[in-house]
Amino acid sequence: MDISLETAAKLLTQANNLVITGHIHPDGDCLGSMLALQEYLESLDKKVELLLDDDLPTLYTFLPGSARIRRPGNTPVTTDLLVIVDASDAERVATVKTQVTGPVLNIDHHISNTKFADYWYIDTEAAATGEIILDILRHLKAEISSTIAINLYTAIATDCGFFRYANTTSATLRNAADLIDAGAQPHVIAEFMETKPLASILVLKNILDTLEIHHQGQIATITISPDIGDKGPDTTEGLINYPRNIEGVEIAIMFNLANSQTTRVSFRSRNVDVSRLALSFGGGGHVRAAGCTVIGQFSAVKRQILQAAKKLLAEYNQ
Image 1 (cartoon, rainbow, N blue to C red):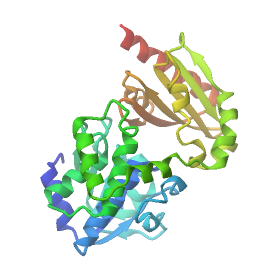
Image 2 (image 1 turned 90 degrees about the vertical axis):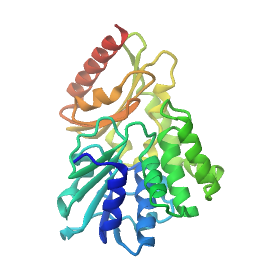
Image 3 (image 1 turned 180 degrees about the vertical axis):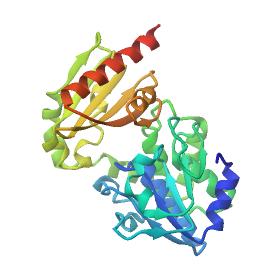
């Protein structure tokens, strides 16, 4: 059921026992939204559990409350409300969706959302799900603590490239200013975000050696082998920005080989709607940033992805 922000707020405050989750391969928006919502609901004496079917990237362990997030166990969980934030389809929630029993509320901003929940509030105009959580808290006249502010500022800033991407609006900047007034410190958050593990710097040369240019310079790809991908998401965070920043490149693609039959694919673009590209392979995401997971031999997967990217560019260039 498509609901209003007011109804979403009512569902949250009426439930006493809640589970909050987000998507696998969590980013700042997913984690910041989860943690901010959890803190507010617990201030109302709600029982809240944070489950995520993936490891927490070291990059985001500075977020207040992040130690509370745990992976689901083998025991089924019954709840008044399962809240799924920043996830556009059920597959991205993985086992949490099947192990938790209860009505499902999805709060999201992805244009590719499949509307898989019992209730969904989707605002595709929001730069981040964190903006929607902030709107809900404002509607509820919640006090924005410094820790909520840190989590929501991180959610918003990371999803709009620290206010550099096309989804940054005047409302986004006003929201960021309000969160700074509430206690978020941009320079501290940026320092955490810009600090890279040594491993990510050491593998950069190897990754750039895989750089390929296709389609008269409009498509650039890099490939991450399983041995590098096994080092964790902190090692590969932000690597796709290197092909994206090449002059003339419209679509950047990062192939992350999980194993011989599974490839995680990330897309970035300047003007083309790459969420359409991801959706055609069972994924989703934003207009300028999207992804999918494709099963099959890598050579075949790469060929299919490149063909689809070229077709999308042909449509755009008409």
